[in-house]
Length: 187
Image (cartoon, rainbow, N blue to C red; front, side, top):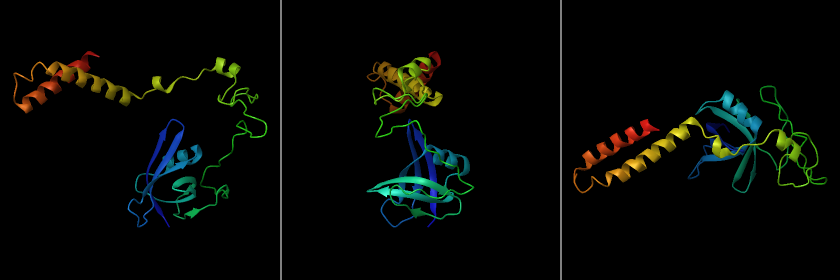
């Protein structure tokens, strides 16, 4: 059964695909987890409303896409099964410097065993290349949106002065927009 691709979404470490399963349920559009390689492949090769085939695992109501193809062939794999690779799909290699349940967790940069498993890198690697918080890496669109929201809040508070004297709602709206535009230009 072919599915219809809607969008690939990335937020932090979470990678999701929005896929229309075309089944007869109340909500045939589902969000499915995926890997970095599958996400990059889908982002580069598919557009909204393209027909795709997926191989996935399902645990309860959660889906995890392990492979995407262009020919529309889909299948559900059993938990932990590895699908054979095809030439039009990216090769997914497992990272060797990750948590090993028997031996503990290792540094993602140098491979040294970590003393505290809650961190991904050792102290030396962290000192060489400290990670920055996500709060400082907002996109320009998000920054512009925040500025506009602050401007409208300030304009709305300034408009409290006019609410008793101006009774026409359209005039209040236009004054609010004008004031917010002026405040945004001052940022």
